[in-house]
Image 1 (tube, helix red, strand yellow):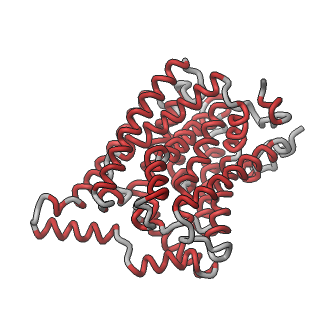
Image 2 (image 1 turned 135 degrees about the vertical axis):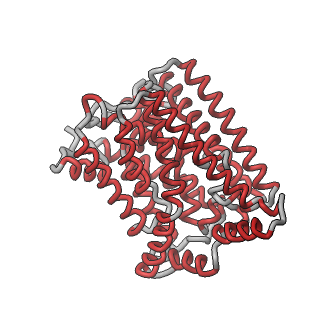
Image 3 (image 1 turned 180 degrees about the vertical axis):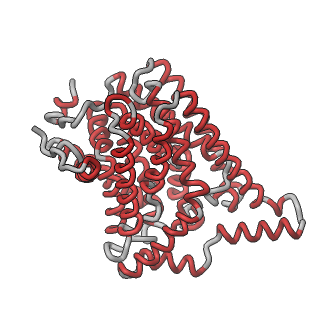
Length: 416
């Protein structure tokens, strides 16, 4: 039985689509909301530390552990890998349009990301770092897979070293009482600990009138761009993109390898990922959520766990596609994946309307577990909207705008 027999006429693709990539992209897009919902609905530090919202017992603690084990970081890693694969598709071979078109496309993505971060008030936007990393990634488009993997490993080692150094600084009281070292520890801890003024600014981001919220949010976004982006976020995105480009060039993301290959990769990915993630969760809980384990920038094993899980999920999707299983689910995920940009911005719009006081004002009003009821509802909306739209149009609304501005002319929209 085909997808079309389940859901009606399949949408006509603007070009030959690779189903497995669309399905994985849709899966990652929906999975990202499992983490982003915490940034939308709770104080931002709750993203890393469940003691901030009291999710240290009962169902909320169970939700925290489940998300940490199976999703934290993995979906963003997978999404970044797919961005790298997309660059390989657009910048090499018959579809390559030259550097002018490519860089215009990236700068437009940067503009969309800035709109998301500043106008839609989403401090956790990933489009800006993706656009910036994509500018660099173009220079790697003709590299061989081995060189791409080696470069990704080098960047991951830098991130692990940087996080390890931060972990050591935050651990200073455990192994020395040297006054100079303790002062370095105090200063670093203070940098990671929100002040009363910072907490007040965060409340204004959600509870203030839009002009006040805009100003407070801009302050938070600019701080992220000044500190987190150049030290961690940019390199985090670039490393996964390099890996994703290598996976595309070796046919892994197109489902071109054997089922046996994907089974082995899934077992290794999930085995390593779950072991690392379980270790990290154990250390967070048994340390009483000590800052060195929940700062977001001081866990050196973080990338090993999340990238391994991302590879596991990608392999699982490849197996499902190869076997023809779950046709209806694949169809919905592929539609969401084809409209990934539109759906990603839709998540921010939902966040603005649901959690800010200019909307329903639900920020910090719902328990962690209750937020995932909203996640399920948003998933349903995004899948239904995507399948409905793509039966009528060739591109998602923002994909059409992005493409039209990139090529300097209106793209054909209606399905013929």
